Length: 267
Image (cartoon, rainbow, N blue to C red; front, side, top):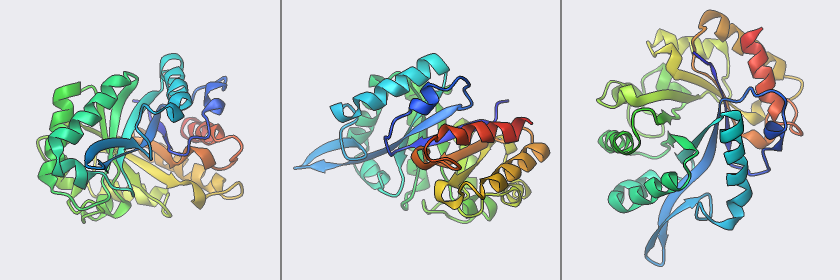
C-alpha cells in the first residue's frame, strides 16, 4: 500500500515545481475549497470566491489536468473548511448537490472528494451525502474527511459536532478511504500512536501539518517523526500539508516538502 503524500491547494500560485520535477513523490492534490450560497436569490457553487469554471481558474485546471494525466496524481475536491458549506448544502440539498455533482462531472480528472466539516451538522446528513456520492460516482471514488486531532484520539465531537467513530461505524464508514487528521501544532509520532491506541485503522489515518509550524531549521524534526511512524506503522495512511504554496522547508520550492517526506518514509 502506498503511503499518501498530499497537498491541499488553495492559494493558486502555480504547480510548476511539481510539473517540472524529474521525480514524482506526490500522490494526491486536494483543490480547495467549495462553498455554496445565494446571489440575488439564485443558488451558486463557488471555488473560493468564483464559479469553478470561471476563466480565473483556467491555469489551475490546466495544471491539474497535466498532473493527473501525465504524473498520475489523484485530484480531489475539498468541500467546506473554515468558510463553511454544509449548512447551505443540507438546507437545499437537491439544488446544491446537483451543482456539486455537475462540477465533478465537468472535470473528469476529479477522482475524490474531501469533506472538511467545520460546522455543526447532523450525522445523518453526512451519511446521506456520502451514500449519494457513492451512488453517483461509485465506490472507487475516493472519499475522505478532515477531523481535528482530538476527534480521532479522544472520540469527542470535533468542529462537525458528531463523533467520527459513529461515522466510521455507520453504513457508509466502509466508503471513507482516509481520515486526514488536523494534527496542527502536534505533528508527531506520539499523536499518531494515540490514534492507534484508540483503535483507528492504521491505513486510514493520514497525519497533517500546518505549513507555519515548521521552517527550514525545524523541518528535520518533522521528517524524523514521520520516519518513526513509518518504522512502527508501515501501512499508515500517509502525510499531508496545509497548504502547498508555503510548504516547508523551502517556500521557493514547495515540492521539496514532498521529496523530503518521501525520503523520510523510504530510507
